[in-house]
Image 1 (cartoon, helix red, strand yellow):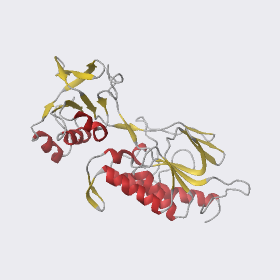
Image 2 (cartoon, rainbow, N blue to C red):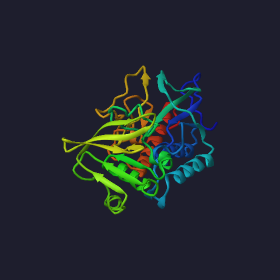
Image 3 (cartoon, one colour):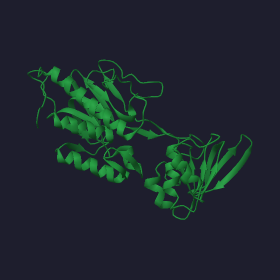
Length: 320
C-alpha cells in the first residue's frame, strides 16, 4: 500500500484507483498512477487487450515492428516492474455509492476512490442466420487466435477495411484459399495491405457482396452470399472470419450521481481530460468517444486519464 487516499477521517478505500482493462490505455494509466505513488489495481481478463490479438504492429513508438503477443508480454513486464496489482478477472459492472466505487467481478468486489474504464471494444457481428449457431464451430472473430485451426483449408474473411485486410494477410500462409468479401465496391485500407492481398495468389476478392447466411452440419461448411443484389453464390469454406469493426465494450455503470452518458454509437462520452459524466470515473482508449482508434493514441489517453484521476483524488484528500 502506498498513498491510500482517505476522503474523510472514517473512510479509507481498498485502492486509490482501479483501472478496468489492460490494453494500451489501461497499462499506460497504471504505470503513470504507480509513478504518482497511488495504490492502483488493474482488473482485466487478459493483458494486452485488442493489441494482443494483432499479429503485426508497426511504428508503435520505440518499435518499428512488434507482434501483438510480444507487446502484451512487454505490458505485463512493465506493470510487474512497478509492483502493480493485477486481478485477471472479467469486470461485470461498476457502481458508485457516495465517494466509493466498487468494481464487481465473478470472483469478488474491489473498492476505490476513482476508476478508469479502459475496456477497449468487442467485435461487431453480422447478425445473419447461422452466425451464432456456428460461432466457435467455424465462425470466428480472431484470426490470430483461431487461424492455425484452418491449415490447408478454404476460408472466408468478411470485411473490406484494415481489420479484414490484416486478417487475410495473417491467413495467407495458413489457408489454401481465402475469399475476401466486402459490401463495398472496393477495398478500403492501407495500400501496403491491399497490395499484399492482391498479389498473394490465394485471395479472391469479392466486392459489392452481402453475406446472407452461414450453413453446414455440425461445423461450418459454407457461406451464402449475394453479389450486386442479384447473384446468389454458396462459398464452400470451413472457416469464416468476421472483421467488420469493433463496438465499445461498455459494462453496466450505476451511480447515485446520475447515469453514464454515451454517444449514439455507444461510446463513453469524455472531456479533453477523459472525465465522464460521473465524477471520479474516467474512460480512455476505444471505449471512449475520442475519434482515433490507434494503439499509440489509446496509450496517450490512458496517461491523461491517469493524471486526471490523480488530480481528482488529490483534491478529495486535500493533498494539493
